[in-house]
Image (cartoon, rainbow, N blue to C red):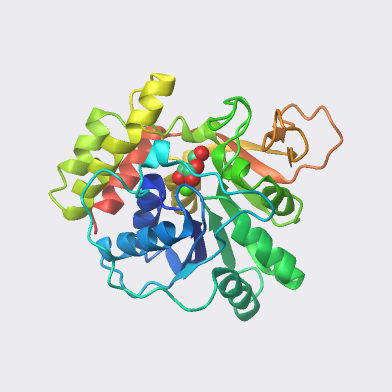
Length: 313
Ligand code: RIB
Ligand code: CA
């Protein structure tokens, strides 16, 4: 079986880092054509630096990392240092990366890659705000129909918001970009908070990382130790929701997830509900379904997969 070609669009963030490690640990199934950084959890200079730190941690310094948008399409950047810390990867001490940042802008890389690769063979995996993806679609409308699938982490419905009462962070940071993506017509699979909040670390799961006895296992354990304090305090949950790795786990074992193909629209007008992903789960409107909204996960199977793969690095 040939490996599935993917581009990971990311704003590392501890959970982004675990997602990138999971992808790089799975070369038989996933061919990471490039990693494109976007401003989100922390500003762009940190997200592209962190993406390279993670690639070096995975011992994959030849991975192509690109810098993309430093701000949303029209709005001021909102960041999440309160969750991820000042560096975006708070927890363990980390060395600056040595591997280079590519000169090409991330949006140009996305466009050029989609034009170069055969139609329907590249999957986009956005796990941060959707600014880079929307910019690529705006600048080169011809590439939209060439995308195989978009598998993204973002949005929420029954679980409601994590940055406002109604909006999930990735969508909230750039709602206009999200609206463009959800209206694109590309097949979309969504990992919203409704499912990622069921992918919770706990002591045994974090110990499984720590007990690997590898630098990767130790770093992931220390990242989750830091990252989980926000959700434990806010939700009283047992551990941290590993949001972004759900995207990669879906590509590796889709059977871990279940959901429903429904209509999802993004609120961009109301100040009260800006960035809300209005999900017609009960199909009460005639709005056409445009995304697979994942709502359930086999959490034990997810952590078994994650632990087995991270142990390879
Ligand atoms: O709301 C969770 C999402 O926002 C995750 O992608 C996390 O990394 C942050 O970007
Ligand atoms: Ca992210």
